[in-house]
Length: 168
Image: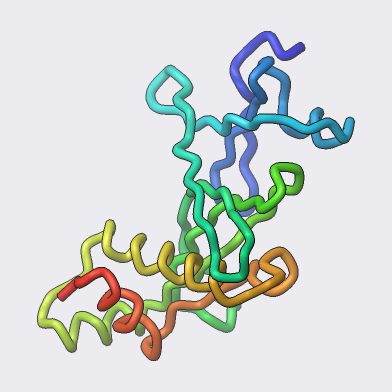
């Protein structure tokens, strides 16, 4: 049994906090034992731990996905999509296997959108573009874990994504 708050780890510059199930045991332990679990990812605000907002989305492929936002960081300089901001989400479609999805929002896409609309995208709007790209992949890719782990928002798709939510 886990007595304290969830564990804290750092991976490749993305801050990751351990997660717990409804009995307070770590997700990693539950996954290794192979039992089904109800996960409750947490994030630290100040000195207390708060649950992450787990969201559900039913893709046109028929899969029901649960996901939450882990964090964002600058893409590595040697990444083919760089310069970009990487948005990381944890995703599951079966409540057993959790996998990371990275959505790379290219700086050039943000500049192109700003040039077309005469204003900069707010940080929340940039997050929206990344999230909408992931939801688009949920609709289009039958094997997200195999084909959708790395997604790109480039100048050719950013307007289409943001137009879908009426962003001008």
